[in-house]
Length: 412
Ligand SMILES: Cc1ncc(COP(=O)(O)O)c(C=O)c1O
Image (tube, rainbow, N blue to C red; front, side):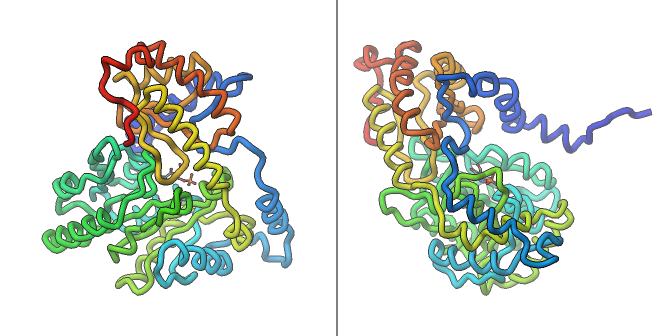
């Protein structure tokens, strides 16, 4: 008798590079064993480090009080949530969004998975750039899709359009674009998105099959220095936007997000029906009723973007002075410095010994770099600076060694 317990599909996802590295990091690393030790400074996941703002708690408390007997009945997408989210999206992505264009989801995860399954069939290819958000591969594999990875161009990690063009085949169905980008902090400029749109139009025509953009943009409100965010949806009609409230509100444990299909797109209603079908068939992937009722209030709230920018400035300047190479992120809440030694995992272990937890580039399939999360407190940032300097010295790359080394810390 075949006693195999776990499905081959789950085993394939578990074995995938980014997935098992992430699970090891969560369950069997310094992050797991040390993050709650007194004095240890945690710059790993985009989690809150301070108490949630009162307005957020009030909105959920109010939404939890039933006003009728159907308050906690089965919910799909609640119209007031869709309408409030669409009004807010109009301010960020200048299209004529209405609530009808949106379906509420269990965060960005839920949005991406149902969009992939609504658009693509098993065996279809999904193209994305490295370094990626570390769960694209798991979501693609679970949907039976074939991940096709294209490295972005360091040190700014712009989209490599020639490489994307070369990666497209008649089986390509989706190109995932993540701007502002986790982990690089890059906000892709309109020129890059226009060029991407042109090449996808041309490739779709050549292959006789539409290639879609899935625009993963949970950080589209977290942009610094007055820069204007641009969504691929402004340049390429066949774009589906996936959004999560987990970043803007820094509350990723309360699952809430949406999928937005541009108004007027041919096949608009059919695609939204397919998305809703996959939400149901995927296991009722709608946010809880209370979270949906809270959306009109939550849309007025945000993390302190100026505070994030101030932490970014402090860290970028200090790290550069020490000799680190780091590009100043234009958005998100991450810094993506180059590891001063080729082995980013060894360097991350050195920092951990000094009490500073960050993520190795290996987790993002891009060795040689590492990620620092800016949701840590201002006090943690200040406390970590001497440790970042000490780590450089430990690996023999401190300011003493600067003269012989390539010019790190330039204004990238
Ligand atoms: C680029 C990107 N996409 C999607 C997600 C998923 O967001 P959520 O956990 O809020 O669903 C994240 C979370 O880290 C992310 O960084």
